[in-house]
Amino acid sequence: MTDTRRQSHRDTIFVENAEILLHDSFPGDQHVLRLHAPECASHALPGSFAHLQCDPVLLMRRPLSIMRTDAGAGWVEFLYKAVGTGTHALSRRLPGEFINLLGPIGKPFKADRTRPRTLLLGGGVGIPPMVFLADSLRSDKHWQPVVFMGSEIPFPFTTRPSHFLLPGMPDAAIACMPLLEDWGIPSRLASLQGYPGCYEGYITALARHWLDALDDSLHSEVGVFACGPHPMLAAVAALADEYSLPCQVSLEEYMACAVGGCAGCVVEINTAEGPAMKRVCVDGPVFDAQTVSWT
Image 1 (cartoon, rainbow, N blue to C red):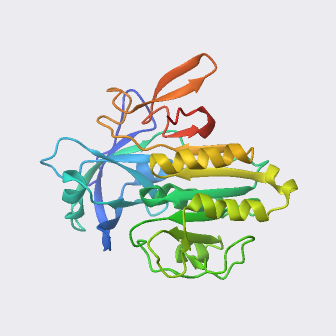
Image 2 (cartoon, rainbow, N blue to C red):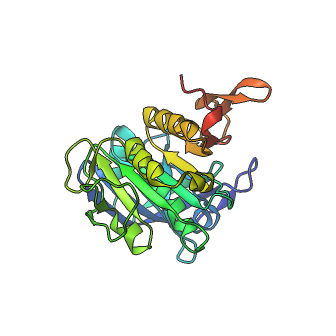
């Protein structure tokens, strides 16, 4: 039941009629969707996204960041929040049904081996790419990832106290994402909603606690990666600049075609030749944070 066709303009994007394998709901109208899409699963990289047809009667697709993949089993997984007509329609789709998927799309995160202390920051719907990136790093002991996640609605998983000690963490900041913990990756959660075990504040403040607790000589080993709302990413870029840390961000914009044809998702990027309008879908979604025009 898989209809796979290479796109004529890019040989790394595939069209698949993907069967829904799992579709779970969480508080805050959040959902985890797992699709059987073997081509996408085999070619996706951390930071990649897919363009999904939420319902056959809706012409416009919706872009969703990929959270996990299993190339062997042929599935890709997404975490999304139902906020509009398309994603609400998607949230009603059932296991066994098929969804047309276009993907994987976009330029991914690229970790620098000279900076093994990878600081991953995910806010809200920006959490999925950080999970994907953490998953990709865990098989190589060279990397020392740390993940901070923030949300102003309940996290889409049952939190638990972390078993990992992290330098600089406030005493009350003990909650973690169990999946990351099981992978051997330390994480902490932040929110302004008073959730038990979560840091009361923004993840940029939590990251500052961690950075300040590191010996200054170790800052040269840190690389920052982030995805989340625009104000959060602007704050992350400013924090990375303050500590002279390289930082990659995954931007989120409304998209129509998602393959670079419509130019509806352009953002201003500073290049060596001056400011230029770049398409988030194919020129990104991952950009060097210091090149993004945040104003």
